[in-house]
Image (cartoon, rainbow, N blue to C red; front, side, top):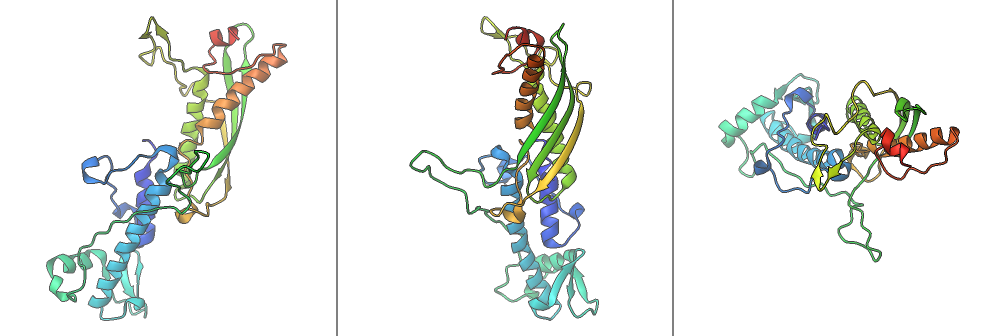
Length: 291
């Protein structure tokens, strides 16, 4: 999906288990190995998958601590995880690596009490409290736990002879939740902002029912040549309804930029003495001419 969800999930699991993110492998793209899901629409990847991963990691953490306390001959309340090892809290330095615990669990399960579940695996379902399963009397339902919001200001230059539009600068302020990986959030937002600039170029053209824009030579998308200066700012407001206060940002960059581009072109036309209302994209020169 381009969201680097695997990176986020490895960070969530690593934080919960107390290990290095490099030690967490996330397997993506195999629908035969995972339960059915409805997808990542609505920027739900971080919220839903992150919450489920954290709950599963918490279950696994309890198993690890339980088995480690038995091997270290102490109470489970007296052990803690630091840097991928389970230590006794008395600062004696006595501890076990995760690999050592796993080796004992799978090769010497008789070392543990009979009621111990030695399978070092866990599964979890994450169900945010504000998700609704059924439409209300007005046909409305809340299918997304939390999304971020944003405002965009786009500055453009309009050539009155050719009607070509050149984006000059974009200022984008995003109201997001708590970030697991801030650099990943910025990358997603910039990618979405550039997609929003596609309102200037992208157009699906048909002739007698046959699509004409079937290659990137015909269907134009923004490239590095067209991308202007982009300034990002963040307002952090964690969601009260999600794990860690996460919010989805996958689609946030695109939506306001498309509208802001149209408004900027309208303003440029108005300054030139043409009061036109833009109600559709694309904003290619021939489209502006036909307003």
